[in-house]
Image (cartoon, rainbow, N blue to C red; front, side, top):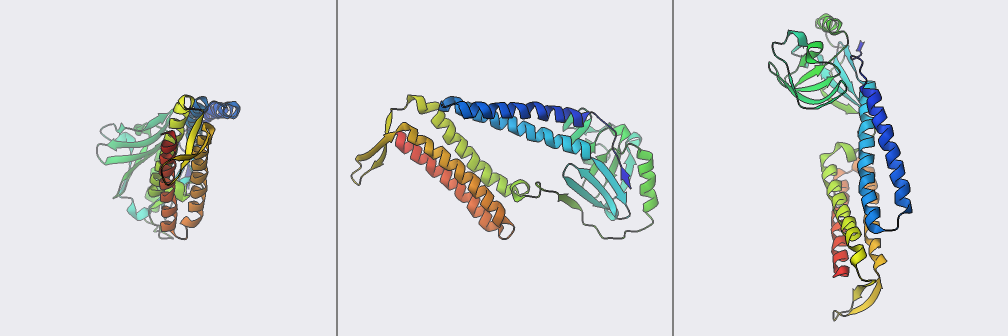
Length: 296
């Protein structure tokens, strides 16, 4: 049995934000392609990354708002939250309480996007709670399990409570395991594995540091720079300072290629993916050292 949440404007608001920042992202891409000045190009690149991030977050908030619903059957409760489905087996549900029957209001620490509540909070009687709601606590229901508490907001909470009470005596048809099932692309190791986040995140920060340093110092560098020294330490090859730009370009290519290769091998051998992503950090560090050596 499927229960829809209380309707809100959050999906349309999030979609509007995504369209605005998506247009800004396209505008910045066009500017970036036209700029030859490294300093301006780097600033545009940082702005582009910010607007792109906001666009993706707003699009996902739109998906959450439009797809949010709750399914209750003899096996348990499913919370559809964006591209994720959280399964709660029926035997894990200790009790379900109407929010209007709670003696105190809940504390909420997440994001309230025109009614869509994302994040964690605290319900005095039941402790830390995960919110998947579009309504205030008084109009929601509290699902209590041994591991955590969930606050959800079916638009007809009394019908939801009656459906739960009716199914208590029926027994399950399947044995569920509690947990989250993610759809693509959230089931990608690049998004689901914390170690992948750390390794690729550090590599990306090192690349940004290299690109930013070169962009900010490029105008002050001499027209030619030493690029090689012989065994005696004497410079035997020079090149124009534009040669420096090859380093961040190479770093970007290595970062993208290794991220994709790691994604491909992760499902067969995650250690190989970790080594590949870790080598990306080493490569970014080496490129930074090379840039400093050339600048002197």
